[in-house]
Image (cartoon, rainbow, N blue to C red):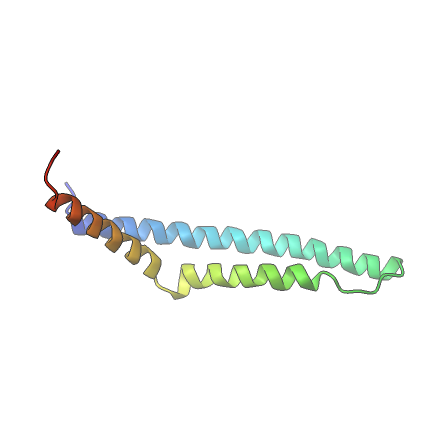
Length: 101
């Protein structure tokens, strides 16, 4: 049987691993899609009279989102997970002090 601390640690590690796996998938999709968009923009630039680098806009916009995903998964060291665990513990304590119905 697991203790509450062992369970809390296992849940933390599993959630952090899920966040990091999600970031890796996000980064891979970003790289594939942006490669395609930049290639399309370059081909349109080369073979048409269009000369506007529109691929920069999705690159920057999506890059900002990817940066925040990275910060949450790797740099914040699970602060959001700990905050959620603390919120659940506080709720459980409130339930424990209430009278049963």
